[in-house]
Image (cartoon, rainbow, N blue to C red; front, side, top):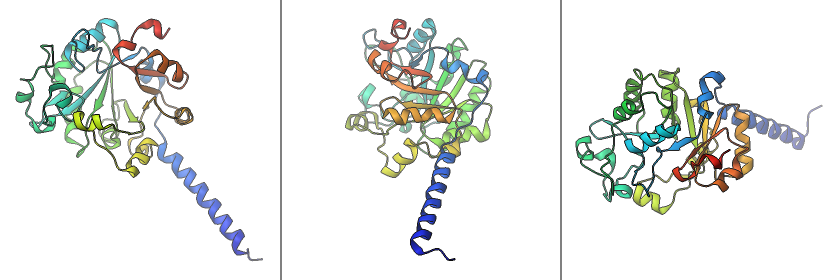
Amino acid sequence: MWLNKPVLFAIIFTLLVACGFIMFNCAKKAERVSADRTKWLTSTLIAHRGMHSESENIPENTLSAFARAIENGYIIELDVAMTKDKKLVVYHDKKLKRLFGLEAYLSEMDYSELAELRFANSPEKIPLFEEVLALVNGQVPLLIEIKNEGAVGELESKLYDQLKSYSGQYAIQSFNPYSVAWFRKNAPEVLRGQLSGSFEVSDYDVEYAGTTRLPWYQKILLSNLLLNFESRPNFIAYEINNNIDKLNSLRKLDVPVLGWTVKSVEEYESVKSVFDNFIVEEFALERKCWE
């Protein structure tokens, strides 16, 4: 007997929903590696842009901030970007306005120009990535965020070339799944992480840091990790200020999950059961807060 139309439509709809659910979960799938390779990611707290401090005039992402993190035994999180003359530097923002009061974009300047700049109330400059590697020298692990919103390949290749001779523990991560995918294809031995969150951007971040506001469809794809089929990350780093059910769902990916960025004990207490470790600000790095 032929099925009547309502029943047929119901069957088709159910099949489409089931297929969509399967595809959704396949797209989000991560790539688990041995616990021996990832256990350092949860061995101690991760100092966000080094252990910087305004009160002590230690700027973020500088050699002094990294030296202080080393002294305290923390994993160092840092940001790597590329200058106009193809030098790899450690700096977070696209623009120089927030930290140097300049309207220029970092990618529009040669390193010789950047090297002349000094952070407020500090002799520190924007360091070359190779200078940071020489300073850290394997004393603590590095969590390296790739800042690349453009064509993928050149920055990633230069970064990998510098890391080949580095003997310390490290992992790379990026909000850009194609940067992570570059390492999946060209350097699969390197631990790789997918950064994500709400992708909500304030007017301040746009004006002073040059942060990009993404269109709604990119926010949906990236916040739901739907491009993991490209990057197949070994760990996830996710914004802590999100719906708790969404955060709990990250556990289903069966890889380590890091939370960013903890700024207070209260924030830590609200999500401590969700994450395996945290990227934290300097004033939240009092060990008594986490014991």
